[in-house]
Image 1 (cartoon, rainbow, N blue to C red):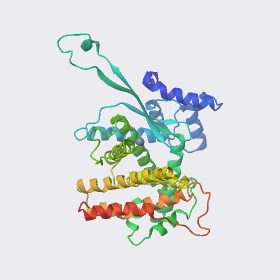
Image 2: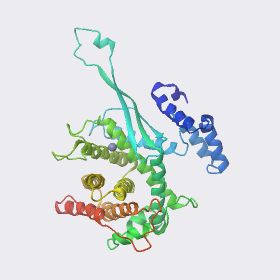
Image 3: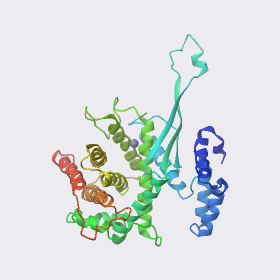
Image 4: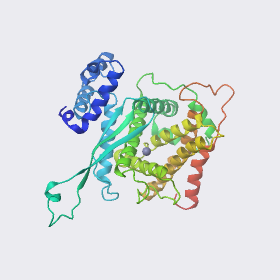
Amino acid sequence: MQQNATGRLKTIENRHREAIENAGLNPADFLFEAQLERARDSGFWGDDADVEFICRLADWSPSRYELIELLPLYYFADKHIRVMQGMSADRFSYPAVEFSVATEPQQLVTAYASSRRSAVVDPLVSGDAGGDSEVSPEVVEHESIVWMHAGLMNTLKVLTTHFARTFVAPAGDLPRFLNLVTGTESPREFLERLFQSRANLSGPRNHALKDAELLLMASVTFIAGHEVGHIYLGHTGVTKPLSPFVSLGNEMPTRQADEWAADGVGLTSLWDGMGIDHTWIAPLLFLALNSGWAASVADTDEPESMERVYDWVRRLVVLVRNLVINLFRNGFEPRRVEPILRCAPLVAGAVHEWVRLGGLTGKPNPRRGGINFDPFVYQAVKDVFNSLRRSGSA
Ligand SMILES: [Zn+2]
């Protein structure tokens, strides 16, 4: 754990220790060794190879208090983003920023990137008034941290597990699930299946959980990639071409354009780091979760709160649009693109409605009195595909 000695990473460990102390708990109980001991006792990690792997990740982790069950997710998300950084160097030339992915202990359902810019003046250059003094001081990014709130991680776990149990398990696995969803299934039928079982995490570890793990991994990669995107792009808005995934209208507000551009980096992280075949469902789940949530608290008479819903829906639409355009640009065969065209509107529309109607919290019971399905998100995503087909892109 030599890494903990460096100043860059102290921020994370200090934040974790502070949160543990503020909760009136003893930090020693949350060190890796103590966590590992408890995990062993619970029988969750019976496997020696698992334990050995976690110990290696503990050496990699910037904080000795990071939750060990989240470490593998952060480790691989970090890897996927770096693979993308390497693979896309010729296309996007993202700056080689250093970053760490870590848990922010608050129960919020968001993530954010913190990044401090500091100008590091090389004395060999700036001290010299003549000669090569035109060289400007080198600007170095340091302490770039992607903070994943604890509440976000819990919610992603519930969402991906419930989705895998409800849809994937009955079909067998993800490829078969995608093949099973035919054009004849209505969004309402799809939605009603989401309500057939309550969201929970219990039950035996089976194949559906393998798929849930894949979707969770893909969600974390997408979100961490999105946040690293904000670091890459310097939060500077629309003054320069941001990413090949985004073409901007002139009147687009900067904040939203930034989100779209960062989503593009998240999608590329998935694409290059994990492959796109089944992972594409994860960002759809995440954005539909947020649009559904915004809709569940929105007041239809309040333009501002409705605007928040539309912001999320637009992000969803931009994402699937870029997904499909790039599938075709990269010459994916129709048999790989068709399931996406078929399933994306259903997944997005149903998950949005499921969250909007309280499915994630399990409060209202829509089975009583029937589900009042609003096809608004389903239609918005479907319209994108139709317009792409018309324009000959798909
Ligand atoms: Zn963002």
